[in-house]
Length: 214
Image 1 (cartoon, rainbow, N blue to C red):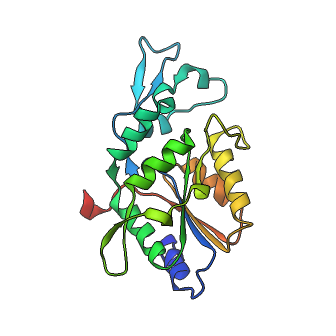
Image 2: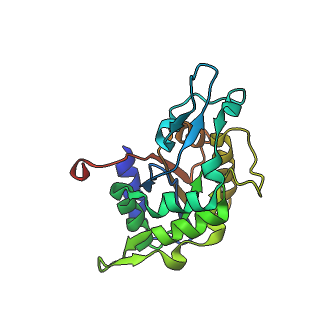
């Protein structure tokens, strides 16, 4: 059974009470605009500005992380603007819509910080199509308690790496929800959660766009 068949099998279940679809933000729900991580490795002649998707391809370790500057991700205006002006990734938003229409809860699990800013910004950004096909604001379908920004400076999420932190959040949520679907574009996060082998947690690797969106 492939991932799409598994997703469909979850949707065909009759009881959706206490089920959660959990989504990453960058390159999953949207492609962010006008926000960068700055790198200055000893081998770099000058500071290099990286988009979030470029940064995701970097081999960042505990030893090399100090060569990266996350200043724009610690600026509330920059963080909010990057989401509000982000380009929606329709293929993944359609998946979210389908589960919301079936009564699933929706949550956010991102490697960003500034959790309060993330919550307000993504809530303002997200829309979904109801059963009539009408586009509506996400509203109270996204609540504060289900938005996790694992590098928030005011909270301490267990783990050293981003994928460890995400894995640990899902381990906790798996004890509270009957079913969880986690969608993320970073293969390290996907593998970490898959390796938990929790029966009620399904993981989907986020594809950026479908063919008809290109």
